[in-house]
Amino acid sequence: MSDNEKLQSQWYVLQTKPNTEISLSELINSNTEVDIWNIHCYLPTLKQGAKTLPMFKGYLFVCHDENGFHQLNYQTGVKCYVRFGGMPSKIRARDIELMHQVEAHFNGVNSVDSYLVKGMRVRITTGVLAGRTGVLMDSPKGKKVALEIENLGRSLLVQVPPSDLLVLDNMDSINNTA
Image 1: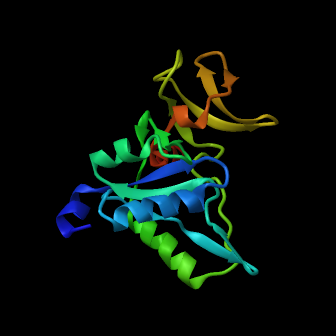
Image 2: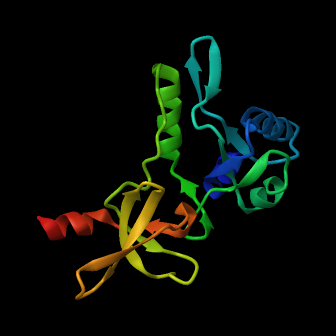
């Protein structure tokens, strides 16, 4: 990938079908090596004993321009692009570099869900509740959004798929409570 192409390319996250991260990574790399595709692929891995495993099970990072979407969407092993607010989620180059550094210098690392944490203000992006804002809550059945009924002192807890949520700036919440 030339410097000019890198400037026009962006990192994205592919969700893979179960246990296909390695084979999909190899497919992308082999097509790129013979100049069929112009896609850079990164599969961060962790050492666990004698095994090398994906750092993020079920995910693969790809860097490409607009054409990359068409080349990857229907490949064996691709489930979908990770989306937030209906659009493919872009990953910052500095976060890719962070993964490279952790991969190279640390052992015994685990990954955990952190993008949706109890107490975050979120906006629902699709469906009949699109545009509504609320606070993320934990429940026995997983994450739910508390939608406040103003002047009643009550909230409705609604289970919403994480892909339909957009995290709002939590600094506003912190500044309002200080």
